[in-house]
Image (cartoon, rainbow, N blue to C red):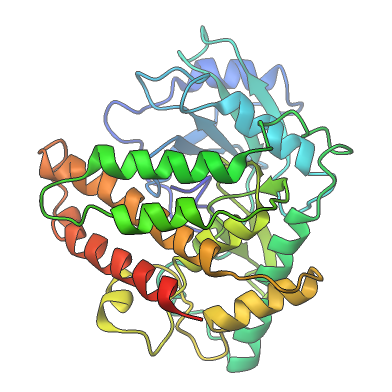
Length: 355
């Protein structure tokens, strides 16, 4: 899911997901000066979680985020939390969009929502847009800038930024291993491995020491916005729904689970959803070494974090496949996800055996 797919073409709102434009404009105009006539409204199609809209006024464009219908914003789709995280982060992590206004009055459109800056640029999906040409040195710069942004996020002073109360923090590793193990087991279907060996290994190899910092938990190229005039530069980081106080090495492990090399096997290439295959990209090993060196970390056995990231991705994919298997969705894209589960657990076992 994406916080706002700002370089993509917004479309007419999906049936049943239309905004009450008059109600939205009336509320926003009380909180943002200079808004005259009603805006035109289009909806971004990217993402399947929270609903994202572009409000186009005569002199500006705004992004509105709201929870899906039928959910309570203070539960799984917490607009207040998303807004507060980004608002607190903006002064110390400039890649975050500027927050303009938060509405907690459900009388307006039936749910909480917030309005933020629209960041224009390129979002690198599976492949870069055809108009975007990067040579090997520019790709290397993009990769380095991405990792530097992640390191910058992990270096944020959570106390000074007012984010120390965001989550429990301590005990994060234990909660993550237990939580994702349970999710995998609960979503398991007959045609995928039990995963018991991997889950047992994760339990037995939890690191003795955990560092707690602000983590994104979905830090991928397709959650970045790149500058139109220099696509090796990052101008925005989106999708803060999963941000929490957690372990930074687990955050990096989650990122690497999606990292596909140009020379990876067929199954990895079939799963690729970001342009990590381009000439100039670091390998997974180079990413790990770069991150650890920049943060002054040594004597780190990264296998736990790599295995966890792959297992977590397997659990996410299995949850999606469970819905398809039980005919809760008919999206044909999910039909063969069970094969990816086998592959990801095989990758976990390969990583476990690596030295």
